[in-house]
Length: 178
Ligand code: NI
Image (cartoon, rainbow, N blue to C red; front, side, top):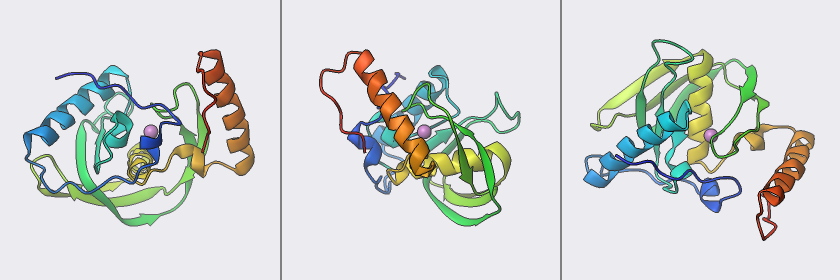
């Protein structure tokens, strides 16, 4: 297993719509799954989508054990939202936007269908942090980030701060923030 570099905003791969995985049992996909699990744990993070390691395919890994015991490692391939209800607001962050956190409104309860790493269809009914995390990671597969769900004003403030931060970190070129 090996650690993968995490793509940082505004890397364009984060804006790509991920493609469906048909060949789940291919070694390449299985290795990607293992490497993403290791990368998420090392970060440390509670969720990681394949776009974030430069591979826009429909694969996410989650592990909420440290925050919600009983919700351990979950590998989800080709996930789809099949039902959603309620609204909840909570503070989110993202490994691709390190050091930045903001409240985001999401569905409170979700039902998601996908496949596990053996290709078996699985259905997950979730509330609480798992529901939020599933929506956050599934957004990544659509090329969407949690900053897109903030108010226009908060997003403007974020972009200004982020540009400054990148500049301070020595980025030569001024990136065009989407
Ligand atoms: Ni994220």
